[in-house]
Image 1 (cartoon, rainbow, N blue to C red):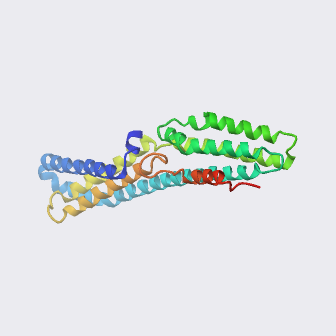
Image 2 (cartoon, rainbow, N blue to C red; image 1 turned 90 degrees about the horizontal axis):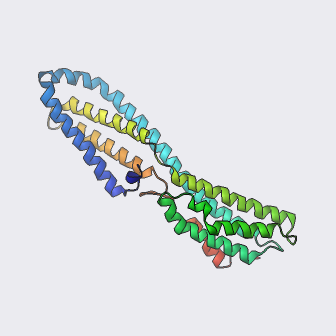
Length: 262
């Protein structure tokens, strides 16, 4: 599954179209060869099935695509949350008595890792690298050492600890999102419903070549594009549509420019 979801959309759409079209062509040849004089009877059975099969495929594809789009949006929100938690921690580090420079330097280093090497690791399936790397451990240590310092007030200490904990939990959410993909069984069920709809449409027009063929063509295009779109959305950090680290990079730029200062 990961091999399919990592492909670009301009490659996925032609592949799905070629597969579904091949199935339609093979089905046409087989039906003409084996049904013989029973074709007319088969057409009469296929016609009532088209609305039911079409509705079934539409329901399944709409449900799955909506689910995957929600997961994609959730990954984007998680990245934005990491940026917001980092900004909150950066402001909290300006409290009197806190080691502001060291904390913000640690935040910048950790976010830089997350947006570069860590992001590549997530795309390659190594989710643990995001929560087990040295820059993240150093960030936790620097923040907690400063928060527990007697020179920092209790409200400021609580704010720093809450922000760094929020950042840590959100990072794990991003790692979980990166490891998520479309269940293979769900894709198989949707593909089978599309194949059955395609074969039924072939039976429906097997005796009416020419203009009636647009029915099969429409079904082939619909099934192929639905399956391709599903694969495009199936992996939030791989493939064509994926979450972007730009919100994280924006916070790094703000820290490096001295925006978070007293």
